[in-house]
Amino acid sequence: MKTSPTYLASLAIGLWLSTSSCWFDGDLKHDTGVVPENLHDGWQIDTPESVGLSSKALAHIHGQLLREDRYRGTLSFSVVKDAKLVFETYLRQRSDQSQYRHVQSVTKTVTSLLFGIASDRGDVPSLDLTVEDLFPSKVAGLDERKRAITLQQLLTMSSGLSFDNEDFAVEMWVEQPHDPVRYMLEKPLYADPGERFYYRDVDPQLVGYALEGLTHQTERELADATLFRALEIHDYYWDHGPDGVSMAAHGLHLRPRDLAKLGLLALDRGLWHGERVVSEAWLDLATSPQIDSDVSSAGVRLPYGFYWWLVPDVGPAMWGHGGQFVLVVPAKNMVLVQTAFPDTDLPDSELPDFLALVKPLLE
Image (cartoon, rainbow, N blue to C red; front, side, top):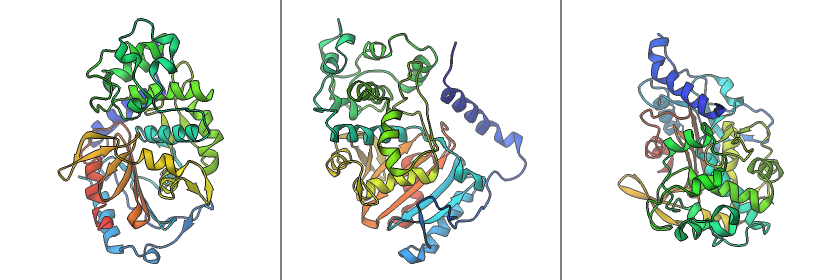
């Protein structure tokens, strides 16, 4: 039986973290400094004071991250303000700066960006395209409600297909069904399509298949030719299934500074160094409320866009399991990025926890 490298790595990391207290007598975290190094990688480096940020607030956040009893999975935290990298810290080792790591469901937001690029260039004629339009050879005998599932519903986690993530990872990447699209579509419905938000990997994976059918490129190929080429993102890994189709929900591995590039692209409304990468119209649509989620922060339920979490009075966010975050804050012209060990259910690894951590920078 074949297994996905991502799946095995996630299991190994989860075991490592759960037993780390038995393996180490010393501290797990280390103060590697907070001053960004000039790597001549396109980032303009400056100081927090030069862009009006509070050194006291940043020192408080840094102190919280260095605690052994808080944010245990966190690997890095960085701040981009006024298009300048002004704060960057690594909690385990400085070399994590150059390492790509599994960013989990941040992959979904990259899928959204690539979908927007494909739509901009005319590959996606309408968000009303149905499963039957997209996969005509896969829908014979299916419930009419399933045949009518639209791209819009897939992009808002409201297809109605009941396929929990714990089952999805095993059934799709370990058991490897012969016909993945048909296999996903044969799952029962938890609700009528479009009726209710339910966060799962099945919807973005179907979008990944749809993108390949519409563009005749895998997501990785599409990214290489457009998004990643424009942002000069070269050192990354994107896992794929046995049929070669990119894992659209959680397969991407990126470096912290490249995550920051994606955040800055969104902050600049799809422009990178003045060149258009994705249309402002798509970003406006993708980062506007499309459906109510089931996640609350400070007592407020977070709206959901097209694979973007939307934080009221703050901005859109990318969120990956275990503590991967890219928070875009238009009012402050700022991007905040955190990376962490992936696939961990440690305390302080949810988006509301991250918002509480960075609150001093948002006030």
